[in-house]
Image (cartoon, rainbow, N blue to C red):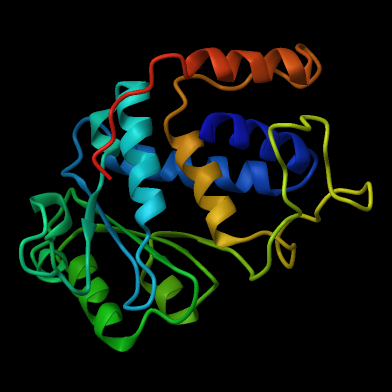
Length: 225
């Protein structure tokens, strides 16, 4: 149901700057890992691992036929006996090279140790992208960044496709709007996997577009997360 949720979120956020901002950032991500890229590394902080984004990107890679979007999740702590795709430690960032892309996703401060590794990866030629709360030091290292202030938009459920914010208004766009990092990750991953631009607003009704999303989910690909 993630595609349905994304469709609902886009409807709620229509008219704000968030749709353009997330699509722009997704475009940078997709271009950096393109067919000739060297792979996508995804890392969070010691306190926050971007599991959901890893799973969403993995799904988008399968659905869209873009295997380069499938990330390698880099972890601060790896426990003995974990499967190979969950056993990649911070040393992988130290070995990052030109052509590879490092996506850093952190809601707060990334920490000095991670910043040092990100700095080294950039010096080695890797493309650095940041999806975070607006850390100044991380943004100074990133080739492109999308800052997400704290807070959450009102919940949207598939049972009420026309639902919007409880007060009848729409969330304001960045900067300063109330939208959470998890929500933005949904939008970025979905936009990165899109094979075509969405139809102009007004050409198709929302329920018709929602039906199209649901039809795409008839045979979902397996996920490793």
